[in-house]
Length: 282
Image (cartoon, rainbow, N blue to C red; front, side, top):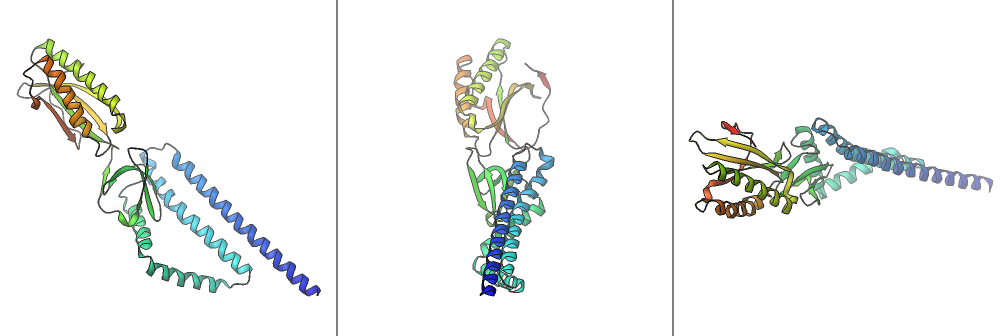
């Protein structure tokens, strides 16, 4: 009878120890995730983007290892040989791999993205029809934050063509041809500034940075124009192409009824251009 009680108490002790270890592993996982989130929340510059990307993927791997190790140790304490545990895990892993090839593709694509440096955490990218800032690169999913502040969760296997915006925005240049008369030119410039401010307030959600009044330029043919630069989210240039241009044209035609549509151009810039000869800046 005493032997039975001893064995019973020994089993209870083992169960209690297993429960403590499993609870400790869960607490360690929460601490790891908390530390990772604090690191990701820090406003680091682009020189740390690779470290943040590695941190994101390493966290997922570490969490898996903690749970896997705690479960294996707990089973060994209950009398299950580790060889049987690893063999079972291998068999289950193969079965899952054959039955869930998408998961394997997610993991392999995530590793490929990390090692090839296609993009890092903090980059502005467009994956398919989704554009946003990379928040996390995990073992299975990549998370973007789009222009509306929503999180877009993309399975890694869906990552195909990727457009990376190194500056973090798309740049639009609006060139407004100025009348030859100095008074009308000054009035046209003032109107352009006012319309730019109005559109920036009305469509604040599409802009990544404040609008910039670059100044006046003169072409080789003698035409003078005033340039405004917008920095916007990818794919959100519609208001600049339509609302800004239409409102500006109406205001400019009040100054000069002969003002033509071609005299206001809206173009997307890929690289920083070399500006023509500057006539002056106001």
